[in-house]
Image (cartoon, rainbow, N blue to C red; front, side, top):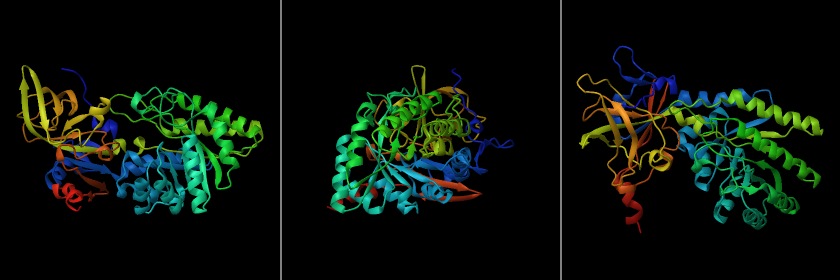
Length: 435
């Protein structure tokens, strides 16, 4: 049997087995009780963990420079989680008008939101400008022209930054690498000067800064510094054109531990990045630019688990399957990225024999699996926790096979709050019947 076991408390200190009962607890709450009360599949999040992860970023920057930590909404967009972060003082990195609407509904400040994404529509730009969004991170020449047209039409000046593509390998999964020239994101370093010249000359655009994001789930900090070197070189080139950049958005992407990764912490990376910018500014005799970072996964990834129940155990010619009620429509990452998620039983089962299972869902696809080759001592009806499921779980969920999306629960200081009810078939049918 393969050793793919994970100790939950290694991922999150608030997630641990009770020393007496063997029950898996999250913020001292029995997860089996939540599964029985709210049903499965069920996402469960720790508010304490989310706030602690955000504060690790805020503390790492404290006293070093004027820094805004902009949470990447796409990682987990539940408005109750956004509200927690807004109350902590977070800004927000958004990639759609819908995400901006969620930020506003959660009490977040639009002026502390940066609007990224490669395909912003006219309607989205109009909405964002009308709401007073802080800045558009522009990803192409055509988009810069569109923002200018909308700003002129609305007679409302738009703050713009150019997202540059530094052609730096983030050394992560190719689907979540965004800083190479073959990726769709950003403007090449060679084209950036031309885009800035257009923006600088346009009466309805205000050149706000420069943006660079090279990918997600980074476990090596060196690509950050390679990208920053190229961005600072570009700043020198722009200064020679009398285009002053007063803000640097250095993106996010610090990874989390899923199995045995050792990603750097904010305290290990951010002060060094800030010091590098400070040294550059002093050497050039310039004012220190303001900075922002855009963490997502590292804020919420290990703050959430997905609970699921074993429907059947099945054996095919020596291959064992645990068929559960969660599926690829609930957690897409394994099917999409072949991503690893730890799996543990919520309660010990003294009657079950340990066996190596593939944990699979009921969706009619061979790619519908959540974990492979995991040693579990389980029986039909037992509950499992899929670990590290707080990021890119519910936000990537779908209604494939006409399955309803899972409910979500938030834990904080002994309080259990349902923050999203389970989706019903009536919810799914309503948009088709109401036409």
